[in-house]
Amino acid sequence: MDRFDLVIIGGGINGAGIAQCASAAGYSVLLLEKGEIAEQTSANSSKLIHGGLRYLESGQLSLVRKSLSERRSLLKLAPNLVKPIPFYIPIYENSQRSQWTIRAGLSAYALLSELDPLGQFKSLPAVQWPNIKGLKLQGLEAVFQYWDAQTDDKALTKAVVRSAVALGAKVLQGAECDALVHRPDNCEVSYLYQDERCKVTASCVVNATGPWVNKLIGCVTPPMAKEEIELIQGSHLLLDIPSPDGILYLESCFDERVVFVMPWEGKTLLGTTETTLASLDEKPQPTREEIYYLLGIYRRYFPESGDIEALEVKIYDTFCGVRVLPKQAGQAFERSRELWLQSRESHPRFLTLYGGKLTTFRSTAKEVTHWLHERLGERVEIADVDRLPLY
Image (cartoon, rainbow, N blue to C red; front, side, top):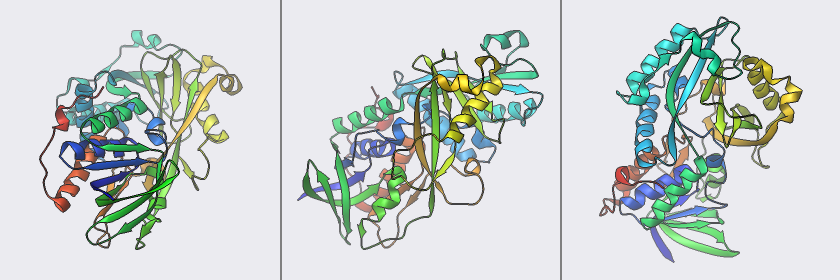
């Protein structure tokens, strides 16, 4: 039976990042993905590498600082995959957030970016407002412009996996783990691959299955407790409308959330929503309510685009990502986006990732590799992930 230092289950961006980081640190790694690499959540995000300006409202300063640091690193390591893009925030006379509130938030954002040139922002003079094609000018009081970055999430994840493989990691697609036995000195991982039952021994196992984290925990022997979570669907609409020159950061006219209007593949991408899912028995699809929610916001800011029915005809494609949040009272929008790692005393060789963000996958990978180091000791480092370019 083959033996590995680490078996990672889940081939999204977090699993990919852990495989790269642990391999670079000298550990033997096997990554199992039941479908294709980056097929699920990591191909259905809002395509942003960003600090999370809106997280300042809920006081998540450490997450914003970490995200901005990772943005800076990814712009350097993956310049062909992660590119700066201007964001525009229009402020109207009836906006929930005043221009002074936004200015204060952008000032804090710039400060947390630690003098990064991308941390600069400005207020556009009124003469430039019409340059944002179609944007409603009536009642407009200010427009702020700042910077973040955009990426092809699936391509980025695959680039990280290629880097992990180059460092020695073994990656299997179409390999579904259906049983895991946790023992004092190792874990036995069973999976189906090419219609065959396979088993490997692992010193440690990481559960990076995203929305399926608790399903995998249900396959563990002896049984272990699960965290209470909620699955939150984020839907996106790709409209067959010429793309904007930058990204519009818009306040919802229905609640306190914000949505983005983004360029994507020459068209206009709207996202995202936050809808609680009862299960993942079927492939997530945008609900009628989500479609009308996004189109209603778009029409509010771009009134010349036509009525809802006219906009609905222009829907070229849709996709949904599913995020994991702790089960708590209140709106999903208000809850922390911080990753949390769970390794129980009863199962010290098994680590579960709950949550996590595309932007901070490298930070997550380093935390997990540190956890691995504490359990297995140090290995001879192969490479420094902070210097490895991603193509």
